[in-house]
Length: 340
Image (cartoon, rainbow, N blue to C red):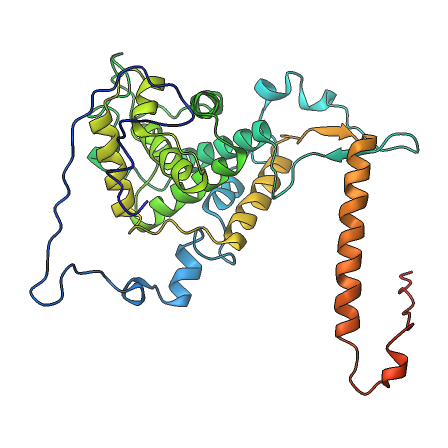
């Protein structure tokens, strides 16, 4: 990621997608040199924001700051009754919940370390929908304007900047990219982090005129940062047939500059976004799939539980008071606490 141009075009291409046409131009990078010590690199302390301001305005950097999409969704009047018939296929009143019994145990197959792909994309696109619907204004940049940089040869409607996209449309756009590029659910969460970081750093609004290119830029960057075998820019040109690799490169460079090249996603921030997406799903009747607990899965959970139990048992032995006699270090058993 240090050289954004060199990772945008490659003769060998992506290891994920097959290459058909290999005809790319060479790009040169010019670096401005200072008079004294060579290339000027801004120290990270020069870009740090005061804690009070950072906690208030940078939820993508700090785990204690509230995510933008959750705040936007809670200000919406129909947060608790949005219609999701497109995903549920039935009315919310007829949805039947699955409950565990003595013979069958249902568990949520989505975890913070291994989210469910389809459900995560639904939640991320719903978060994007609320960011668009409840935006403060229509601040944008030309590089993200779909009229100036169209993604297809189809004529952009005259009212493209005034009509908010439906959740269904956003979901189909993101789902198509993730399916074609074989991206993971974790990449979807990182995409949302980069998107909200862009809105905060660049003081932009995601609106009907720019949402496709902003989402595409966030997916492009997240796939390269998160995935070991990233999809090249030229591969996205095979998915979106009418976009050029030069346009993709330029958009990626602008995206990185607006992010101040801050592509770090702390684990605490990632976890916050995951659980806020779960909260968003609960408030909008987007249920995560429940699967019966199989024998194989039960054995894996039992093995993991046993490893954790042994680990904490060793830690408790190390944490014993040093005033105990050495003769009492062997065979000491502590009774489990009983919570009533």
